[in-house]
Length: 172
Image (tube, rainbow, N blue to C red):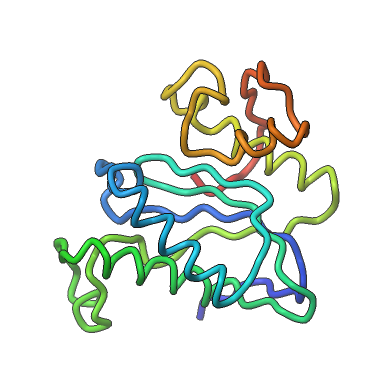
């Protein structure tokens, strides 16, 4: 059995990936992903502290509401809504067929319960800097699918921030 740490009202870092890491569905279909994400957040609220969408995976830092630790159901809904909106099935294992999965996403995702403010800052910066790490852009602010733009507007980070990524385990 797979066990996850569940802490009511906690902050978490996530890595959620496509099943086929060679595909670019997440940015090719960014509007569908945004709709799925927003519909889920409206139905089961949470705060997005940071997020970056890359072609084949997402990194996000969330804060859940007090008394709520149900991040798994939120990700299940986001993934299902996005998959339904795309409307196609991919090559699937017998297990995915049996569970009526369409084969777009990896079944599991990485989660990390944020321990303290330093840990939170490291994971937020990891989200911002991930497009630089993967070589998509030279500066984090040049990547269009990132919450860094919101955070620049709010004065949380300088527009010139280059995107140095902290060392550590981030579920890549």
